[in-house]
Amino acid sequence: MVKFNVKVANNTLLITAYVTFPENSPSLDVYKDGFGEVDFTVRLTQEEMLTLSILLLQKSIELNKLILKQTKEKKGNK
Image (tube, rainbow, N blue to C red; front, side, top):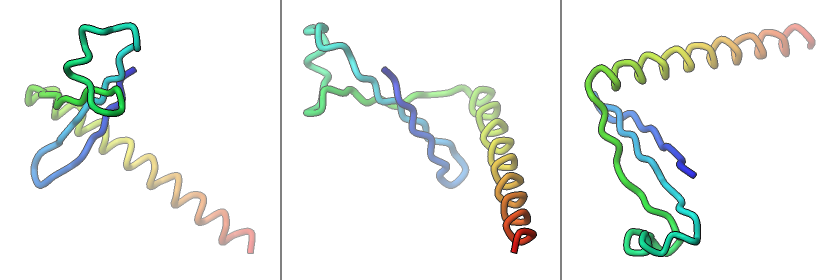
């Protein structure tokens, strides 16, 4: 299983992936932390970072529109 954490910091995008390995992978024990997970930083090309940034911006705009719509609907019901 892989879980990604995306953070915006200054003028860069920091992406970390947390990987959980199956318990039957003894050769990976060296890399595991106390929770049985291995964390590492994902490096993207400038094109990949730009693509991801655009996607995040689009999703942010969609979320803001949804929140605005719900807020207007709540005000209309009062």
